[in-house]
Length: 114
Length: 109
Image 1 (tube, each protein chain N blue to C red):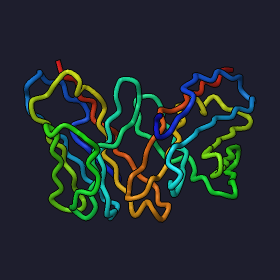
Image 2 (cartoon, rainbow over the protein chains, first blue to last red):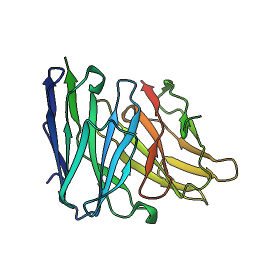
Image 3 (cartoon, helix red, strand yellow):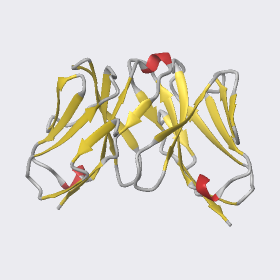
Image 4 (cartoon, rainbow over the protein chains, first blue to last red):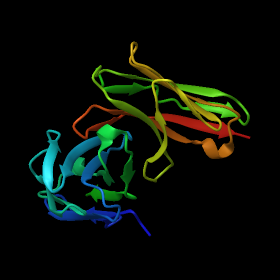
């Protein structure tokens, strides 16, 4: 029973296209995240939502638009894809991390822009 | 200066060795600290939380020095299966977890 699931796992697409990655968690957590891991393996937070409300937006280009229809889902839509968007995108969820709760990651979505 | 800094390695050690990783963080208001492990082409997974008093989980010991803004992870009696990238993670507040770039460990027979 996958706790944080994201689809698709692999995505190859051409520059200029628009694509979406979906994420769902069945842990009952209030907070969900999108992280990007680039070719140098640096894992950087992009967005965080708490109970469907955006709480972190880390200077990500506005071609990236997260959407949270409910607290169990956080989707990522990317417009006008660029070569530099090629990376692994990890969805994650947690309960209140300020209380020391841990963050659980999905398996990642490997995006390649050609 | 990066928010969370780690030596990228790789650290090449033989089985049975003891190895230590260090991590420094820049935000003195950081609230909690973790070590995560990431295997090749997999998602990061929690290894252990880091407490002010230091804590141990089997062969793994984590230490925190708030005054120096420094976190460490010690692995004793290394196993082949310990080969992975170890990520230092800092909670800066407001649900923001910042990851270090990771330290790669290779344990050889």
